[in-house]
Image (cartoon, rainbow, N blue to C red; front, side):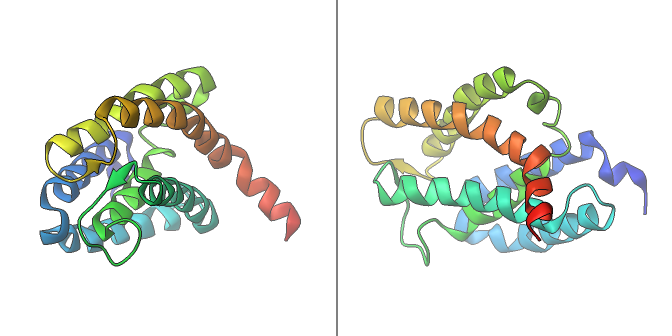
Length: 173
């Protein structure tokens, strides 16, 4: 297996292609990306980039935050099987890989992670809203301010969990 598949540049490209495919294609194309993301996750676990429990903890946190924001009416999606659409669940799986690879450098400083969370997440959701993937249940200003506050805290927490959370879990087992 070529090592370049485990590189940060490949991770950036893979995530951004998945983001584009899921946000633009949504229900029509998410299934085309699912096997690629699953294969990529398997490769990263096989080469010990992260453990399955690490992935599940961080993936679950991201999905839970978006599900809660949907239940609270901050996000509105069309009809879905769950709280959030499957394409967004897949997008969270892809994003989780970036915490260990392409965004790892951001997580070295919790302040930089907080600033990136406060700016990048609202920006991405605003782009998604403009592309028709999500609607904000309240005003755009309120939704973006709420996202900024939430992700200024949640992104550094995710990096902390990526680095430290699994050790604590292993100690309990």
